[in-house]
Length: 119
Image (cartoon, rainbow, N blue to C red):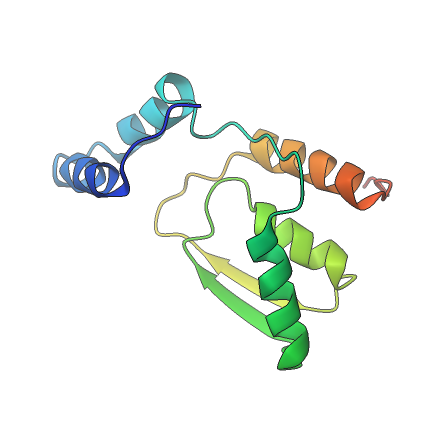
């Protein structure tokens, strides 16, 4: 996958915002840099760390700003805590891609050995 330095990415994002071209930035991410593809080969160690911290402090609700397009960590948290954690996710841009979310969900279900209950 194409990697870009976060400082350069931040600068480019600011430039696209200044030029009122956020949707162009999203399209570049999705189709050129392929940053919006999800390939989850294993459960991320940071997700486990966050889950352990949630347990340690007996947290029942989370607020995440900058949740992203795939909601990977949030999906993991939902399954890990069997939907007992209330999550509020905020992103300043409407960049969520439900196909990516569904793909991430399928991969996380498989890694956790769970089956989809469907709708």
